[in-house]
Image 1 (cartoon, rainbow over the protein chains, first blue to last red):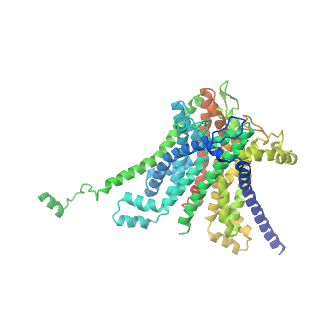
Image 2 (cartoon, one colour):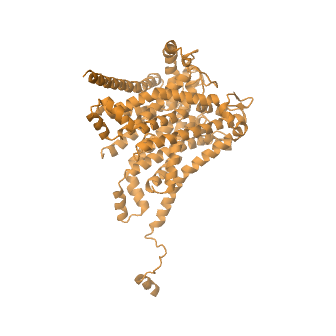
Image 3 (cartoon, one colour):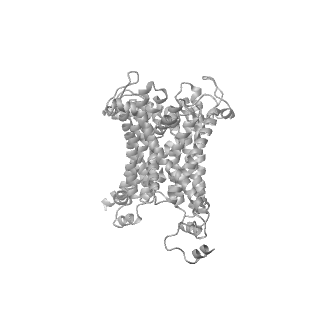
Length: 281
Length: 330
């Protein structure tokens, strides 16, 4: 009898510890978000988005150059990475038996686990070292390379959810394979593919390491892809590790903007997919 | 005329030339060609990556060979490089991260799959997955201005008082340190370990739980004696996947570890990791040999993470075959 009470007590104790683990795991999230809001929100203003940084040590100014830079770098990376990733994902899902599918999937897994800093070194060696100067394009190339395996995986998983009967119906009606793939399979999974793409964009938008020695960062507003360019994550890094109080305020505000962008992208992506797939079971 | 009617009446006995069913078979080929181009790009990129890393590292590989891994001198001016402190820092910081993150994330994963009320499972899992969406540099920022002051003022002195008999917790407290980096890494890898082990636990058949409950086990005993052993290799896979993340994590570690090329016994001492050294020194490298040594470090880091990730994936696939649990978590 006594032993049974002990055993049940131990069970309850372990459940209590696990609830403690949940609280401990959620605490950093709330701490980080709260700190970002408290320290970052005060510095957000119209100037922050529309002005260039003030000279070091002076107040005022903004980080327009970094916001524009991030938009350009991430935009170009998406232009390169999304088509390749989506095409490869469709290939892997539509030709599951082929040897190329096996190799591509395996390599995508390898690349998915590759540290982003290593990809940065690759982009440096490939583009910066041969052109002899830092460039936004090299940064975009590094980010695109991080995107491709992510987009491939989500695209493939989404397409696999399409029942084969849909494919067969289209083929039976005389659709050629390419039209079956594009207007039946891909169209059915379009929300899923969009979601995967948005998640990938959200992930690379916050990447800093691959940009350190490719896009490098800059104090000026630049639209030229073959020149160094500022980016929001780089700005957070430089300002956070810099000596001035004013810079630290910028860093918090820039981090808040960055995280809002990332969260909005990934939340939007998740909501879009929930409506489409979860309801159908 | 006759030729045509002949063919209509009696097709040749041997295989006829491939007759296109309709105009679109060319479009089919073009379509497949485009997709193949996309699929081929990925292995080609990996090949390029290896080639470029090797080309970049050639100089250092030729000069230092495998001694690079075991020597500790890092002197850009004298062009002497040894990566042992970097490798040591990488391994220790990741290990510290796992020591903290594994019990927490397994606790959360087990609670969410086995004990939690149904309504809170999804929301809690979602909140924790948000941790994975926070960019590394934001963790670094938070670490510099919130975590490190907190650790330096209250947590580290307490640990030194309580655990100071261990060499791990001795010596001066600066703030930026191996332990600070390990803690931030633990927060960062926790969502990955949690979500993969949750998927793996959910793949355990319900009959396992029912059988042990029917034999009189308490709920905890059912979990620890049947569910967890069933999912064991998947859970180990999840942990190794977390290890892979921790090994390559760059920005947050760079900002918190103190960046010193030294091997110290104390976790309070500043240290360095492979990724952090590349991040800090690459754009300001003095001379070709320095660059090449850093590329060599990148090459080693790449090889290590590939091996670690491949191992993790094998283990996860063994449990959740077909459900691609690992892929989803990434």
